[in-house]
Length: 268
Image (cartoon, rainbow, N blue to C red):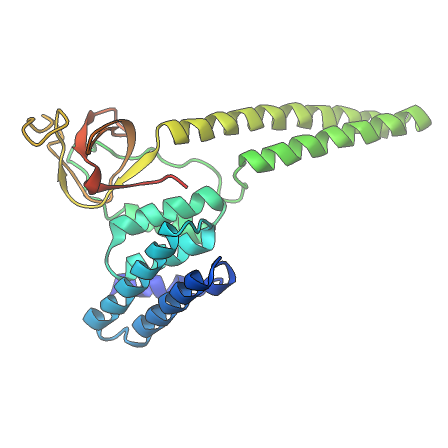
């Protein structure tokens, strides 16, 4: 019931039909919206509501597989998956959405609520580090840093022209402030680029079902000594792929293998 209440709080958003690309996509978007609304209408009949939310999620997944990539799609998909009680996949959906809209407070709030449902080992292996980024401060994406650095540079240029004409302290102040801002945002742009490259080279994989954590790429290998099983909803990083198996690392540095079918990979 709590999952339904959470979903009701986030159900309203941009209609899927506004971003679907092809006529078939529009039909899928309409079907997803229809099934989602049917789930809301039957919210007091939990099993029936979950069937409708599952149908909505499946339609949104087809839109994803058709190549649609945007925050609105993944927000809607995450909502449907949460209400269908497929919350590990909802973690993946919100992670995908945040790659397009990192400042989306709704997705971040509900992602945090879903992460709290992950059953970590007693010693906390796999626990994610706390997000210390202030909620009021916009997250600096590559695009934002690029435009802020360009804007700061243009401010310096304008201030230099003003100083040549007026020789005022105000113009000097703008030159100094613009120069500092240009340096700061250029450095931030570089760090954002490096983070983006790292995320692509070592992508996040969300475990969608409780899975044995093996020492090698096969079911014959023994399970990890300290973390024999990975709980569903756990977020990991992919180090290597061999056949149908992935070598992954937990946030606390434990390394092992699991089948590709056990995860969904965050790769927009």
